[in-house]
Length: 411
Image (cartoon, rainbow, N blue to C red; front, top):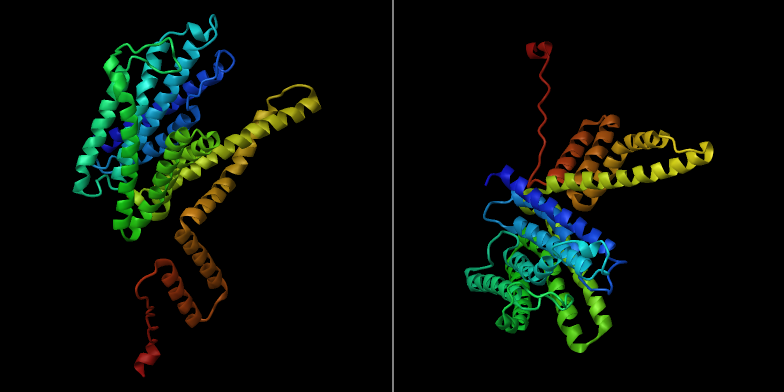
């Protein structure tokens, strides 16, 4: 697959994830007043995974070597999160809505209820392999191959077992799996236990990699390792300890930690890329951050100015003239370059401190050039600038002597 084809595929998966998320949230909102009973459906967790992982995966997947699947794992996490959200919200909206409402008339609710019952098992797979393969796409050592095979076997077998389970889900009492087999029900609890054990082991593999790594590689791994360990601990507290102890407040706090640690994974990836030059695509991420932030700020300013101008003009003229749109457009045009420079400066200051300091040093030296006339002072200043910005092992300055005039050569 060429780089261009990989880019098209990655952004296509990202678009599908975001569209499924949007439609899932639409059904969530639409069903609030029509569903007869509240259902806890993990909508916030799934939304966070879809929105935070998909764009990061689309950015990095086409730019990594073909043997490094980290970007595609990010795409898969985002896509499965979106599938979980859409399938669950559509099923809830159509199967649990008040009879006679427009939602209850929509088709396919039972099929998506069945999908939502087993896709969470498949969703475990990319998370586990992400911890095993980050950052170079290889296992920490050859000894981890049996564990990787076990992960694939448990995830695949567990998804099949849950799909064959006669009861689709407890929240859909009237829905049964179309492939229901009674024996599969005996596999559910062992699959959950084994998956959590595998998750803790995968997190431990990242700690092993962190201990063995040195220099810049260690700095690239440590932020991601901290996020994975926090995710493993918070998941254990949320779904194992809190249920075993039946402590409600611990479950709520742990759930918040789970969401925060999941967001921490793409954040840690961004820090490794921007600050420690992971994958050497920091310039692309820089532009994405700058223009993404710029677009968001300008859209907010545009919306606010339209609202403000319309209200002012309604008070003054008693109608809604198109002048508000024209004025808002002019404001956006005037703010574009100043905002872009400020956002670029902020991102450079936060993530490209060395580049930011070097630019400040050059600006200071440029100001000195305008006023300084002493050659020795300028020479020392130039050497200092080169030493501070380029940080060479040794720096020296050689000035070519001024050639003698004809009269001096004759003497």
